[in-house]
Image 1 (cartoon, rainbow, N blue to C red):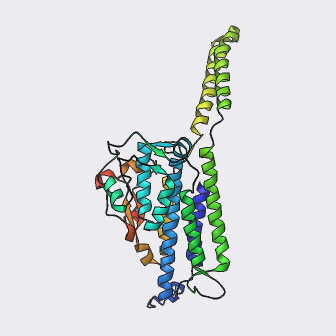
Image 2 (image 1 turned 60 degrees about the vertical axis):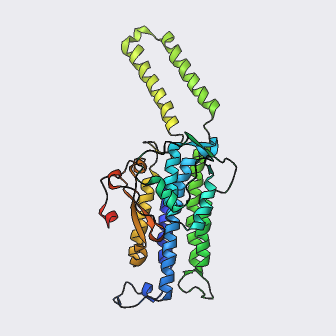
Image 3 (image 1 turned 90 degrees about the vertical axis):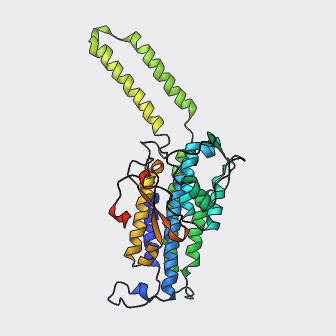
Length: 352
C-alpha cells in the first residue's frame, strides 16, 4: 500500500506544479509581492483544493474498503464495531465531498441498516451520531449489519472518475481555452500515476478477498498433529534428555509458530495490532498535501482546509498517536469530539 500513497503524493505534487494559474501564481517566488490575483489565479485555487480533497477522500475510501472487503463483501455482514468505524470514515468523507459526490460514493458501500434503525446520511445526522459518544456504538444497534454482496461499482471507482473528470475539465489544449489549467502533454503522466495507485489497491484487495485454501490448511494442520503424536514413539532414549525431549519440543513449537504466523499474515490490512497502519499513511498524505499547498504559494487555498479532532476509538486502531484529520472548511461540521477523548500527543504542524 506504500506504493498507492507514494503515487497519490506525487499526483498532488505534480498537479500543483503543472497547474499554471494566473500572473500571481507564476510570479509568487519573485519580489513582486504586490501583484493582485486575477481570475485565472482564483480558478487555479479551485483546482488545487479539488485535487487535494479528492485525493484524500480516495485514500480514506481505501481504508474503508479494507474494513468491508472481507467480512462485508465475502460473508455479507459486518460487526457493530466495524460499522461504527466505517461510519466515522463516512463522516470524514462527508466533510470532503460535495453532496452529490458523497451520495454516489455512499451508495456503493452497500451497507443495509435495519428498518427500525435509520442510516445516518446527512452531515448533521453523522455529527449527532458521534457527538460526545466516546468509544461505544449505540446500545440499540444489532450485533451485525447486512452488507449487499451483489457485484456493483466500488466507491473508489467513483472518486477516481471525479479525479479524471477534473483532469479533463482543466486540461489546456492547443486552443488555450483553459489558460490557467494543465497543459495537455502533462495529463498522461498524471493519469499514469492514478493508474498505478489504483492497481496497487487492486492488488491489496485481491489479497484480502482471496480465501485461504482450506484443503491445504487442513492438510498442514493434520500432518503437524500426526507428527507431534507419533514423534514420541520413535524417540531414541540413548540421545539423552536434550536430544530426545528438548529438541523435539523446540521443533514442535517452531512448526506451530509458523502455522500461527501464516494465519496472521492472511489479511494484513485490518485493524489488529500487527496489521499495516493505513491511518498513519493517510495522515501523512494529509500533512504533505497541506505543505504542498504552502510550497506552491497558495496559503488561501490551504486556509480552506481545517483540522478536526479524531476520537480515541478511531485513533486506537493505529499504533501512532494520530490526533487530527483534515476536512474542507465549507463542508466541515462543528467539532464533535471533546478534548478529553483524543490522544494528548500532537505535532506543532497540526496545531498550526
